[in-house]
Length: 279
Image (tube, rainbow, N blue to C red; front, side, top):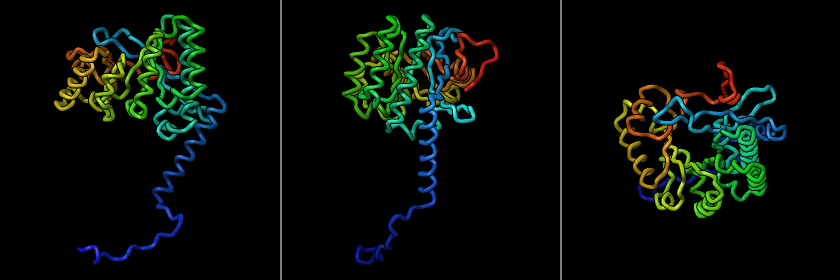
């Protein structure tokens, strides 16, 4: 059909939106409101999940502190339910501040603890986040060498040059960095070479079912090879069964994380009795 044969475009009423768009917008508004109320009340906690040694899976190498919200009823809300909605807003920066503050408190309370805390690269220029970091590091001389900051591929690629300078400064002070969700599709390998992350966390999409998936086996080995080339420590995410864990051990993975080794718990595992509260 030639362009002159096309039917005229139908007028669209101003302000008209589809039911799906309306539902998505309404859900996002409700999520923002829930997060805002929880932040105002400081109803946030960390849930701790072990990252175990590949060669000795009975021994945690370190823990990850995962942010959780509490709603008005005390229900625990995991980050996956709200983080994408608030990631680019100031609420996202406030969540990062609270997560870092609680992580630094945990490090101060347990001198033997090594802890990873998630952050968005967007928080690098947020004054309150930097104040929280500098205050926590100043209060404990050993905190920097026990702190790992996790940055996702997606946020690191938003401002790679700023992330590079920021990492170099903090690594000189002893802080380590982990690239979260490695392989999810954002990383420019040119920047990977310049970032010098200490730890690479291989995205769970390549790990789940790896013992029975030739494709995942090849892709994971390729990602591990890249990490080793740049002298970066490797962590397999989302390890959920014994077969996958055994296969990853055979590949020589440095560390593993997932429900097979422990669910995130509100009560720190190193303090907890056998029955733990999961989150």
